[in-house]
Image (cartoon, helix red, strand yellow):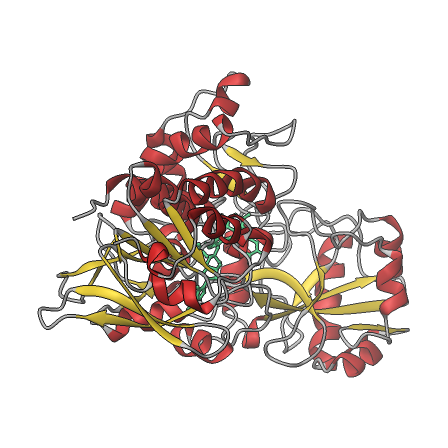
Length: 506
Ligand SMILES: Cc1cc2nc3c(=O)[nH]c(=O)nc-3n(C[C@H](O)[C@H](O)[C@H](O)COP(=O)(O)OP(=O)(O)OC[C@H]3O[C@@H](n4cnc5c(N)ncnc54)[C@H](O)[C@@H]3O)c2cc1C
């Protein structure tokens, strides 16, 4: 019998609650317990980037879907993400006469990450990313006028296939939300907000048969069903787990607050295994608010893809360590990853500050001068020795580093690191140092899955009825040990779509 009728409420009343779920209404407990009597065709843990398309496509095929969402609103990381996605053969490319194929997309990804993403998952992604983006477009998704482009902030593709909506991740959410609403209205999707999946139910033969949740009042409930889908995101808001899995502290917290790694732990608890933490690579140029780990962002420097550097970079010993104008930001970021605590200091002088393009996103260079001595990461001094002492760098090393840089430049000699873009020597005080840190917004480690998105044991054997999509499978699985354009959001959406299209109700 329909459990809603069980508790003597009309379908209309039920719809009143469910349709307002997206504006953060939590179902009354009586409804929650009624829903626990149903047998769901699919239970999606996490209503974010990957979970929403999975729910939509399953519901549109007639499956009865339950979304369990810890936050008070659906959307997950789409609220924060810049929403840059990539795919070959999209209508956006066609409109600009850009010829592209999944094979070219595959080659570009594997070139940029040196073949370190999962080849089978990458192949699935490139074959289906274009159609996923075209599906978004059919449902109202638009992109910036000048997109698709080859690059934004990460190593470039050879073909313009990088596309972004004007509102970032929200542009994508704005497409997904009305479709979810419509499926809620039809009764094919039900959402439990402010409800945390805390455990999986596993039968004696190892099959996953349901989920144990805790609602916002602390009530524990069990929901039973086939096709339990872990789509609860990564662990980049959980410093302890992050460090344990990546062997690197979480220097900066930028991820969605609910990215606590719940799915990683749930998957492991029933026999799944974690992989990919070793693929961690830091991003460039984060000025932290303070010395805590994790800290919060204070300013982010534009990298070589966005701006040619005038400053030099030194490590904690006061030595240069990389060709600052290297054409690959991925190369620079990996070398930053080899430096103590992934710290890198920009050293520059007044003449550079007055003439160079703005160094930080959303800042004029004047702000660097204003922050110096005020915000701990920015220091200013009349000579290099004093600057080194204020900054905590080795004074003699820093002096000789700058002397060699200047000598080579003024004598027209080759730079020690083969740097070519050397507009000015560092010889016109006052001098400035800016301490920057490596950072990341994603977790590279995640659950092992097979080509059908089934969670697997380390032996490769699938755990029946348990699937994982999105960052819970690890950013490293799809992006490898590099930040390849769009390889977080695109696989989350694409695998969600594919899984929703393929799971069966029995
Ligand atoms: C600031 C930022 C910018 C980014 N920009 C880009 C970009 O431009 N391009 C790109 O490709 N990638 C980008 N990424 C990465 C990308 O956004 C993510 O990898 C991707 O969105 C993750 O999708 P997901 O579905 O796995 O997780 P989410 O979208 O976070 O969804 C997970 C959902 O699960 C819920 N949840 C968590 N735990 C539980 C639980 N126990 N029970 C129930 N629900 C739970 C969460 O509340 C959330 O709603 C960015 C990331 C960040 C943080």
